View 1 (cartoon, rainbow, N blue to C red):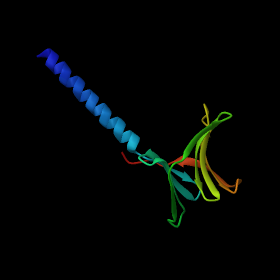
View 2: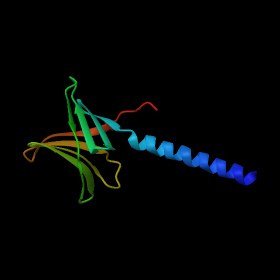
View 3: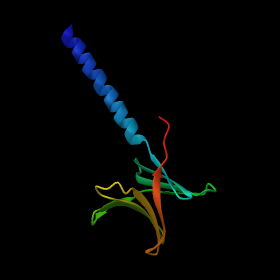
View 4: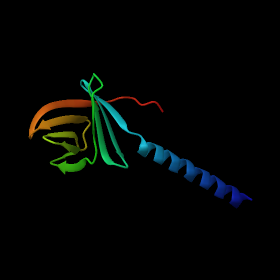
Length: 119
């Protein structure tokens, strides 16, 4: 009886942990970047980016490339002549930044501020 109860409790704990981990992984992260709202996710379509301006005009990008260079990490999405990059310094509380480039020239840099998501 005790062994059966322990097995049941262990199964329940593992099930709850798995559900929690799956729900956490599926949840996108949303940020304010100046006048833009940015949503980042890593789901079925790889690393995705959704950026919307104050008028509700949005761009959706898939297949972002992760990178690491000189103490920085990030993800970059290509869209024609434009590149959208979210980056952060490793081992730092400096925060994350959105950089937008046109033909290799940076045209925008904004700090990302997390938007609280309802649980």
